[in-house]
Length: 276
Ligand code: BGC
Image (cartoon, rainbow, N blue to C red; front, side, top):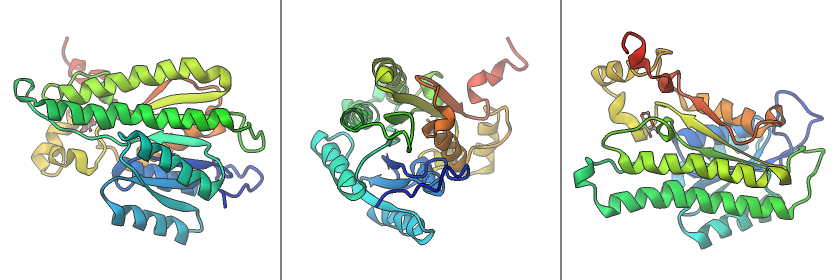
């Protein structure tokens, strides 16, 4: 079974398409999965350590008439990523969209950062993105373009961060991984555009999820965070979900190698509003 095409219903821009989303048991990944399902896609909800949360998102999507399955894999392990794609294709027949969303933080002052903190972030945030995208590209190259579904052979979206651009003291491993994601995305976009594979990125700012709970859970922390966000509110996972639908859909068919910042202006150097 695949997402059902309803003669190009504009409210279902991903109808007939099948999408794998990594790190989709919670936070931004879960919101992307929900938005994709609402837009008509069949979705693979990848998780690593939260099976119940992943299963409940699948239930929720199925109850609303959508198609979804759980996919267990550690994205930094090559055999697990390959098996995840095989399992998805066994269930839905083909893969049209891949969203690399898995990411972790292991924060530490630079002089205290351990090699384990460094390496685990690189493994998930960078090697995981490489393995996920590579498997996606391999599948896209082996499938025929189905013009009734999309003019593209496939779409890859890397979920990065404003910290692919904004340096972040105390988070050198994380910022280095996201800077890496940015040039991984652009280099791959340049390489495979001629194959009609569209590769783009999304750079979320401060989105209310568990990864940054300490930055918004008390009123004091929230006020401090809001100083960094010109638009005056903290982002919601759905803000990213909606952007991801557009970037995966044919509405963005001429967009390749771009990073969409979904950050309420966080990357506009707000400190310069009254300074400089
Ligand atoms: C980080 C969050 C942080 C946000 C803005 C994200 O990439 O994961 O912890 O709040 O960037 O700084």
